[in-house]
Image 1 (spheres, rainbow, N blue to C red):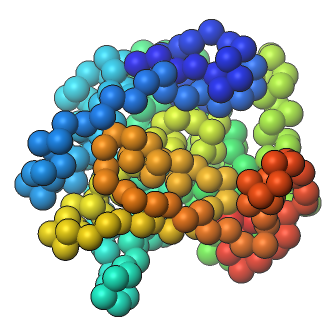
Image 2 (spheres, rainbow, N blue to C red; image 1 turned 90 degrees about the vertical axis):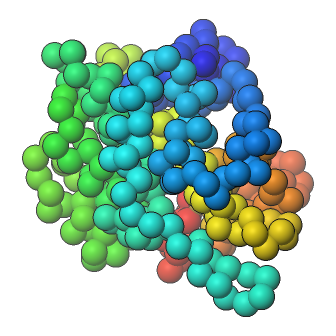
Length: 302
């Protein structure tokens, strides 16, 4: 599987290099060159597959031969070790709970998957890599936990002072080992700007990667959630509509990828808070970034 820059100004690369570098040399995101739909037989019999087997079927084409099949299955088993319950609200509405991981963040899956991929790629390499990440709350905790003790990987997390919850701050700052958390006097956008500035320095960027949702190994595993929900709801034989809380839009992107793989999803709703730059862009076609406003849904304050 090759990955290309969404600006088409960088050479194509493989999964390994896309994960290690985080973003393309032209400073934009990598994206899979092709998406091959999964066989209809898989969807017709999905209830017969375990969560691990579903995850392997979903992710294998995007990893290609960069990780041997048995090792990839091991990575998945170390990533998927908690449940994703679907809780009924009324006859036609249910909530997919993604907070049952170790840090109570839906990003626990992507962070652990990426950490294990990087650990595999780095096992015969004496050079250390630094994972630089900005967080508005939940990313930092998930990344810190996922990468804790990972060989050859140091993690630096930038978080906005006073803008994360007490428990999130403890998740960032109390682990030690290879995890360093730096408090920034500003908002999430300031943290993100510092990360982007670091990646613009060729010498610094040579030893950096990102664990934000710009990294393919961080957001692609989030496709699993949609398949697990379909597995649970398949017997109801109803059309599926997903409403997805959205900040950087990585999770809903994974959902649309799942749809491209053949998952029968009728429609997506991207739910945002008052930080509405993207909805406004979709209305009038004008992209006008502005400072984020703090809300009670701080993980979406982007």
